[in-house]
Length: 382
Ligand SMILES: NC(=O)c1ccc[n+]([C@@H]2O[C@H](COP(=O)([O-])OP(=O)(O)OC[C@H]3O[C@@H](n4cnc5c(N)ncnc54)[C@H](O)[C@@H]3O)[C@@H](O)[C@H]2O)c1
Ligand SMILES: O=P(O)(O)OC[C@H](O)CO
Image 1 (cartoon, rainbow, N blue to C red):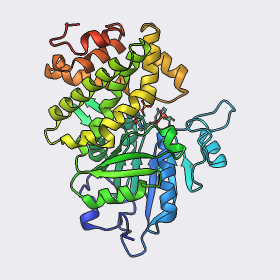
Image 2 (spheres, helix red, strand yellow; image 1 turned 90 degrees about the vertical axis):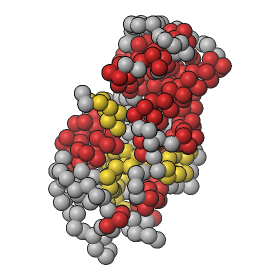
Image 3 (cartoon, rainbow, N blue to C red; image 1 turned 60 degrees about the vertical axis):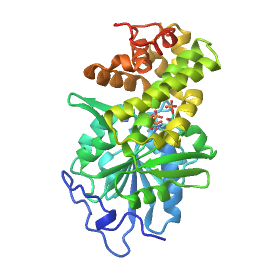
Image 4 (cartoon, rainbow, N blue to C red; image 1 turned 30 degrees about the vertical axis):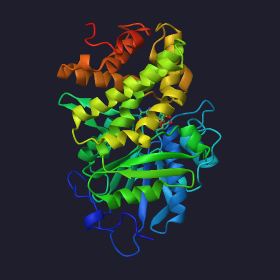
C-alpha cells in the first residue's frame, strides 16, 4: 500500500509560514501519520468514525484518532469528553452510535493536534476563526488539512473560503470534503457519497479518498476546491428557502422551482467569485445531490419550515436552540454573508433567491416572499 502523507517533496505541503516545526522532521522510514479531528458535533463525530475505521486498517497511520471536543457539561453534571471516552459514544451530538474504539476525545485543543500531520477541520463555520487563531504556531509545518465545514468567512477585504482561511492562518495546505452527507444517515452506515475538492496535487486527493472511503461511503476527487467548497456552503441558503416553502405548504412543484433557482444562483455566485469553477462540479455529490438531500432531510430545512409555520414571529436563534439541542445552523449566517458580498458588489438584483432568503431571515420580508421575489428581476429595494 502507498504510504500516506508522510513524504517530503511532491506530496508534502508547500506552505511553511507561521507554523512551528512540531515534529515535522519525522519523515523517515517507519513514520506513521497521526490524525486529529477538530470538531465533535454530529458530522465531526461521524467523520472521526470514518477515519478511525481506516487508520486501524492502514499500516501507515497510527491507530489513534484524536477528536477535539468543545467541552460542555451535560445535564447529568458529567463532562462531555469523559462521557465520549467512557461510552465510545457522543452522547450529546450523535447519541446511539458507537464510534470506533480508537477515537479519543480531548478537550484541550493544543493537545488534540499535537504531533498530528493530518488535520480534519469539522466545526460550525462561525467558530473557525477562534480555533485557527489559537492554533497558530502549534501545528506541524508539514501537516495536510481538509475542511468539512460548510460556510465561509466574510471579512472587510471580502469573502474568504474556510479552506483558504485555514491555509493562510496555519500555513498548511487545505483540501475540502463536501457532499450529500446527512450525518445521522452515515452514522447508521447507509450508503452515501462525497466529493473531495483538491488544488494542484492529485496524490494528496487520493490520500484523502483512502482515509475517508468505507464500504458505505464513496469518495470522488475533483480538482476544483473553490467549486466543491462553495457548493457545500451555498446549498444551506437554498435549504432555508426550501424550508420556507414546506412551512407554507406550497407543494412539490414550488419546492422544485426553488431548488432550480437556487442551483442557478449557486452556479452564478461561484463563477462570480472564481471563474475557474467547473460546471461538472455541480453534478458531483457536492452539487445537485447535496442540494437535494439538504432540501428534504436537513436541519436548515427543518428549522426554516418551523420559522415559516410561525409566520416569522419566532426567531431562528430561538427555534435553533429549541429544535436542535446544541447543533448549529449554517444557512442563516451564510445567507447574511452572501448578502453582504452581493450588496458590496451592487449585485443583489441578480441573486433574488439568495437576497430574499436573508431578507426573510432578518425579518424584512414575510416567509411568503420566497416565491414572490425569488424569480423577480429587478427586485424591490428594502
Ligand atoms: N450534521 C451534518 O449532517 C453535516 C453534514 C455535512 C457537513 N456538515 C457541516 O459540518 C460542520 C460541523 O457541523 P456538525 O454537524 O458536526 O456540528 P453540530 O451542529 O452537530 O454541533 C455543533 C458543534 O459546535 C460545538 N460548539 C459550540 N460552541 C462552540 C464554540 N464556541 N467553539 C467551538 N465549538 C463550539 C459544539 O460542541 C458541537 O460540537 C458544519 O459546517 C456543517 O455545515 C454537517
Ligand atoms: O442538516 P443540514 O441542513 O446542516 O445539512 C447537513 C448536510 O450538509 C447535508 O449534506
